[in-house]
Structures are given as C-alpha cells and as structure tokens.
Image 1 (tube, rainbow, N blue to C red):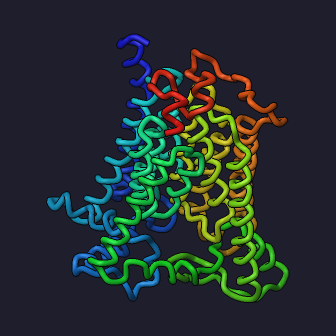
Image 2 (tube, rainbow, N blue to C red):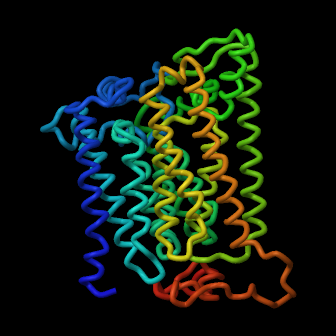
Image 3 (tube, helix red, strand yellow):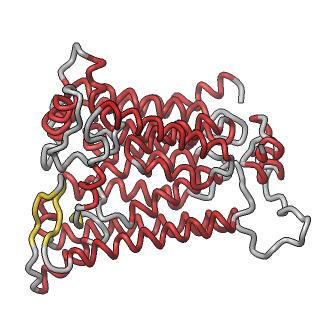
Length: 432
C-alpha cells in the first residue's frame, strides 16, 4: 500500500468517527437529550461522589456500589487532569480521547502486512450503536487498555502482559486476554504488574479489596441471561420484586439465589471449555491471541449475573481487533455483537421502563439481545476451535500442516509461534 492509498483508506473511518463522536458528545453534554433515563448521572453523581472520597486517601468503604478493583481509582480521579473543566465534562473529554486512541491503534495496526483497516471501521461504527451510555462509564478507558494489550500481542509479550495486568486491576475482565498467550513473559509481566498495583493500593489506601465482598453479594440483574427466567415467571405468579440493589436493578425474591448460582455454574462451564481448548490447541496463527480473548470475554459476558449496557463496548473493541486481521473467521460473531449493541441501546436507555415492567416489548428485547450474545459466543468458540485444534492427532515428530497464506503473514512459523514474519517473530523466540 503506498502512502496515497493508505491515507485514502483512513479518510472514511476518521470522517465517520468525527461525526458520530460529535453526536455522542452533544448527548453527553446534554445539548440534546437522549430518550429514556439520564445515563450521564452516574458520572455527575456516583463517580464524582467517589472522586471526593478517593481524594481523602481511602476507598468508598461504606458504598456497596463500589465494586471495582483498586486501580479503578485511577479512572475515577483522572478528570482532575483537566482541572479547567468541571468533573463530568472532564470525564467525557477523557473518554473521547480514549476512544480516539483506540481508533489510532486500530488504524496503525491495519496498515501492517496481513492486516486491514476493517477493524477500525468496526470500532467507528460499533461504539455509537451503544448511545451516550458508552461515554458515561469508565469502561471505554479499560477497553482502550485491552485493545492496546492485544495489539502489542506476540510482538511485545511483556508489554502485552503489563497492559493486561493493568486492565485486570481496572476492571478484572482484561485478565481473559491472556487465555491465548503462550509466552511465559506475557503471563509473568501481567502477574508482576497486577501484584505491584494491588500491593501499592493496599498499603497506601484502606479498603482496596472491599469490592470483593460487594461483588459476591450481588443478585441477578434484570438484563442478564438468567433474569429471563424471572421475566417469564412474573407472568405466572412469581411474587419477587424488582429493586435497585448494589448499584443495579435486580430481581429479589424466591429462587433468585438458585438462578444466580446457575449463572456462576455456566461461567464455570465456560472456563472449563476454555481450559480444554487451551490444552488441545496446537495451531497458533497470528490472529489466535485476539480470537481467544474475544471468545473468552463473550462467554463470560453472556453467562454473567450482570450484563450492564456498557459491557458491550468490551466486545466491540475485541471484535475490532479480530477483524483487523485479513483472514479472520470472526466476521459473523462480530456482526452479531454489533447487532446486539444496537438492541442494547433500545432496551437501555430507550425502552428501559418496559424492561423493568417485564412487558412484551421489554422481554422481547432482552431475548433478542441475550440470544445474539449466546449465538455470538457459540459461533466464535466454534471458529476458534476449528482454526487452532487439529481434527486428528499428528504423527510423532510431524508439525501441523501449514494453513496460512504468505500474503497474509500466516506462515508455518507464524502458526507455531503466534508470530508474523513481518514483525520479526520466529519459533525460537516463542520458546524463549
């Protein structure tokens, strides 16, 4: 690709990014009011309240809605960097900058051999489907760290591990990025980073790990997969309640504990499948690292007791990284995630009152959104298994048959080592 063609290929996503993000900012700043509940109040009320407590040198010990690892404090206090703006406006600007950073990372990666700017298009188009909610939560900041980690990948395993460790201390789920990492350096860097941050916060501020108790005591949030049981049961005489509990709208009443336990069991089954895949996989293409992370986060999101709308930005970011590879097999799961993102905005905030009421419209939206997530997880898992696990055992001493295309940077060496010859990866380096 020459310079002129490269510039032209980036003009479209940059222009669309500018238009859509301007609209998101107008909604966030309330120049225009998005229908439904005010999604920005979490920033101006909850986040700013936490900010005031964190400034005193302690975590919000008495607030059960604080359910995040200790490094989340960095995201909450970060608006102080823009002291010339009020807290909420500074937060929205920082989220915009994180959004732009993800786009820049995807565009840069898309110009490498074997890559494409299609991933940047997924990001540009996917984020606005989530509406202003995506700018009113700190999940965008975590997603930026996760995307940077995956794009560092096998080329810089220590950097990838450090970023994954930082992400895990921001909101736990980025630890799943390591599921497809075969280099010990990545795992070691993640452990050192997470351990150092955890120790630093534990020593410096009281209550660094109080979030573990608050998370344990959560119930079944009304947008989750398990909640569909109670949405249907309400029409057949179930006498539970829908209440604001632990910072989200949850079902409380008979059998809620059973369904919550079942959701945890499903997450355990997902973990077991991932472990089986990891032990069975022998064919690691350059894209396998991103594909495995996408599958893992999809599985744990779909089976979680809580599926908050902002969680979808995690999946959009990981889908964008996957589709940045020219020979990706994740097109269908990514399309399902984007469709689910649009339906998510319809159920929250647009028609959230129908979801709370559990009427036909609300329940239908949840069935569609959660069904799309389950289908995406199954399709992505099938693709990951198909591309990385051989159909029959190879004879001793025989390597898996090459399936890559040199034009895409997927050569036999790349398959054995997560590597890309254009990036200087070799099997010997992988073994190190």
